[in-house]
Length: 387
Image 1 (tube, rainbow, N blue to C red):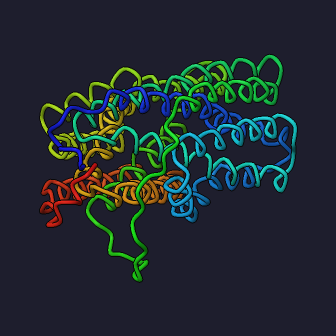
Image 2 (cartoon, one colour):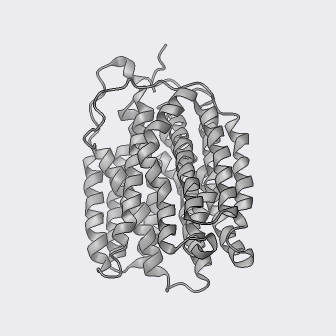
């Protein structure tokens, strides 16, 4: 019997969503701390600065190419086996960051982590939206649990890098990753319904695809790199400490404001909040480009945290049934493409005035959000309404 969209969510829906988020939150610090330390200590990892950039981009590139395979594996095997495998592999990546040197030794670890993140991220989104009632609220709480690990690990990694060097912290983070097994053992192991294969593999991007790309491009790529470049000489103290605090602040905002974004979506509608918050983000990006650096940066961090829980419930409502898992994966691919190309645009900052970079990007983000304001018609097949 199909679950009614208006029926209360099953009692295990919230715990499952929370456990998946905890597993990702315990494995994510290894990646975010590497983003902090690898560019600053590239020589100690046996790579050049250019190679460090390629290594940090490799996990996104493999996700762009491999999200479909991960989604099929996840649908076939279920949450518990998929997430358990991902947690163990993430711990191995942490050990590799602590012990291996050189581009070709570290590259397989970055590719492996990309697949691990894809699996864990897909599980958190799929379980948060497993029932339409409370999906936005669960998505907001999920973002808060995911951010707990990075917000602690980033300042700790910065301090330890000054005291004992940049490698030792990854031994600790590998052990922290294994704690995620305590969360994955409580996840469901049933497979997810799969969408029948279709002959057409390349589809026209939807408004949500365009918005996902622009959010990754502006708020995950262009803004973060620009903040480091434009603000590196405006804050006192050691560069690694300053960078660690800046990155941790972004995750702290997710902890404090992610649940609030979910509640706003439940109360006012996820599409309406997505459009409003994106338009405000576009205005803040314009101000950022015109030189109101710290005030607009603080506003962008707040708006980004409020927006993060919105996309998954929108996707789940517009693409119900077996198509939901593949749709969530597709939005993640578009966001990764945007986040991977955003730093390329930020590379123009030394030669182009910031207003001419952030202004057009803000306009495109606003247009993408405005295109998402209209929800498509509900599917004609009544059976497709199953969450």
